[in-house]
Length: 319
Image (tube, rainbow, N blue to C red; front, side):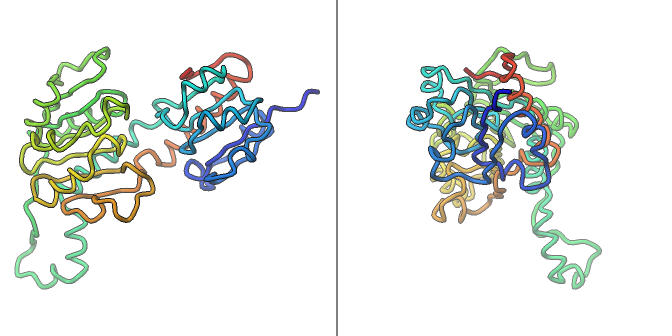
């Protein structure tokens, strides 16, 4: 019997902090799982035929030090964590996990939208501080509340997640507009297509759903922030690098708009990230993808990718 191929999971904790099982993967290969791998990558991957990574970078230099490596599985949809050109040059197969949890991220989009429109956290804190008990009226409001019905939601990009977001928005009787970088996917009849600049200037809420590429890096910059209508809400659950964070912090502190983000340009962020101290922003720690159900689906697809590679019937191949 031939020895089973060695597979190393470099950063398994974010996907599986202990509530999921690696057993299906163990049945396929000689498995080693590390919670995190900030260094010692070459040593940890020595002799590995396969690597799974979520956010640990797989560079050309690392690949060159691993002559037996012929498969890299990305535990995410985005592929920028791997040097794809180097992998292609070395004949290394790379797969990803598309569409494992669009409903989960869509939930997070509306969690931020509802946070800003209903101000639950603000009023919850006030009630617990005794303000309702001391009120002369049966109710009180600390800020203006906003109905979503009739508001325009602008989606930048229209993949699986944005499609889910659009369906939820239409259920709220919102108007939905889309600016697409990839125009191959047809739009539903209820959804209007706009140029990016028109979308920014006419939307009450803007939600980013495009990949981070050289073309989209800091897509929302100082000039485009000036196009956004006053008091609009900017949502980003895609990639932090889509936004010029310094420019956004300035706009937020000037009271020109509001923001809700689940991603930042560096994760974990440095303490001097300007958004951490900005006004009018809600920030969650990149957990839109991380419901139990979405993580289980991600793990299932990742294991199926490995199994398909081992039988030379490769699924979800990037290169």
